[in-house]
Amino acid sequence: MNEAPKKNAPADPRAHIGHVHLKVADLERSLQFYSGVLGLEVMQRMGDSAAFLSAGGYHHHIAINTWESLGGSPPPPGTTGLYHTAIVYPTRVAMADALHRVLKASIPLEGAADHGVSESIYLRDPDDNGVELYRDKPREVWPHDKDGKLAMYTRPLDLKGLLSEAEAKEEDGLPTGPNDL
Image (tube, rainbow, N blue to C red; front, top):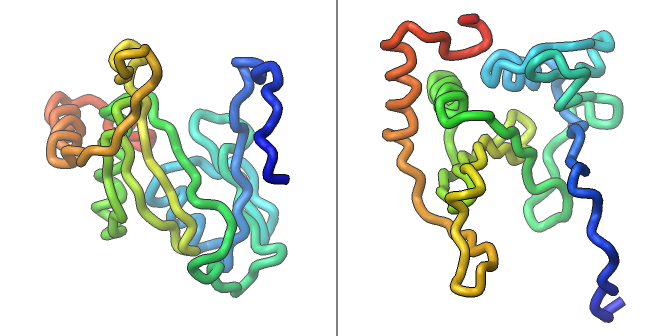
């Protein structure tokens, strides 16, 4: 098992991560976070045990259920499992709107970073699952080293500057979220 992995042909470049299915302790509490705060739409609900949520009418980006976790507690620190779920926003303004929603709901941030290729905000959902809210930067501005290889980094993200983009959008009278459309 300590051998270096054999180099195979790369995966099809159209492959992507489809959706996340989370075990939660309290379905209503999780719905309040993912739908009420983040604004994802409930596409289908299975009584009080599961729900499927998305942005833009997709069948689901995030599913939540209590099938094996009703009333359960988060995994203890130092154990393996999901590090975080990442929600990708199409624009900086859309990401700023998400940040505004999180702050309005008094949800604490764990961090915020500029990674050169993306801008990210980190927080926890009600079941202590990590959540990353981010947007990719255009590929043409991604940092590269002198050999042309990708050179990501972690630097502080200017949250005030990010929020000012959402505020400017509100002042222009443009919609700031799905409920304003």
